[in-house]
Image (tube, rainbow, N blue to C red; front, side, top):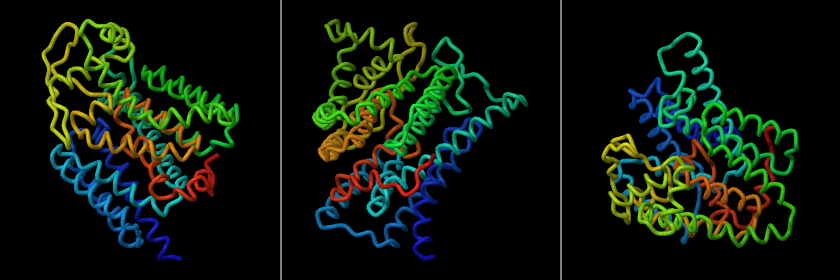
Length: 385
């Protein structure tokens, strides 16, 4: 019993180390100390490998061949783009084969809560004691915004939003009106302080949850969600490519771009300055300063554009097929979160990371737990009240 608990604690420690790495990487207090984040990141990397070998996680021949091929591709890509974070995501994915999915979500949810509360407390102390760090974020919007000592308000919102969505996942069958009210109050406070529109995704999940027992809506969901990730990627390319071209889509782009805070414009810059890469490429983020865009650097907030120009189109194809296969299982709860993830990726890239969202791990239901997946989704032994 003790030995089993020790093995189980290894993957938990690895996940916690990922959150430590995330904390030291995005907290402005530690922004000049990259070494600490790297140490925790690579320790998590090693612990995931240790867990797989110690736990005797076994795979059939087809799975093993796929794992070896995908691991080789990912290591090559990680080396090319100088980012090994995706390897840790894949290793954690492999560790979930024998784990209860809700146990994983519970752990991620608790870690997110601890990180968010820590950042809010640090921000409050900094504001009250004049710690020397910005209380208000002076950035790209002519409105006051609070980043809570995260490097950008959107990074704070990503974690707060997905913590709330994780709660919805865990309470899917039990959540009541009063709990939705609390979530909307928290969402409203988040928007009031950060001015980030992505928090409105909470409204979408509430609407989708309300239709969970509607047979016709379930059938419609099964049809749409299978192609959701691929279609969002396709639409991203179409709209970003046609920005400023004077056609009908370009005209629509002008209005959408204002709503999306220059995300389409920056996606257009990414496509024009970088080739679509097969297996990874270091992107050029430089641009000319102008009155319209008063920066000499741009960012990419669309995961699909980042996949095509930085990580590799091969991974976009693999993920599109993987989400298609997962959605085919026909579980409305899983499909709801695939839809949320696919939509969110249009405006932010951070949901690909486990320290923000558990969504990428949903793919385990198609690849590891097809027979008992639906039981395990609903069968959490301990749900946070």
